Length: 87
Image (cartoon, rainbow, N blue to C red; front, side, top):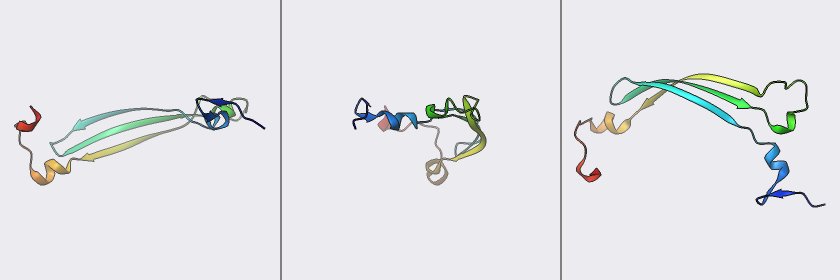
């Protein structure tokens, strides 16, 4: 039995894919530290369109507090001058 293919991928594989949407808002506290809030929404796979339990387009979401540490600035120190090799 042959399966239909789209661009070389089996159609069944594409029905199991899940779209993800997100946004992040952050604040640079210092040259080495940054804090932010991230929100993500996950759309249901297309093979669940006809199931009544999965009535919404978005079937999962989360909100996270994220932090970033810039190890270069933390270890080597932060200089306000642009390095000469960048220009």
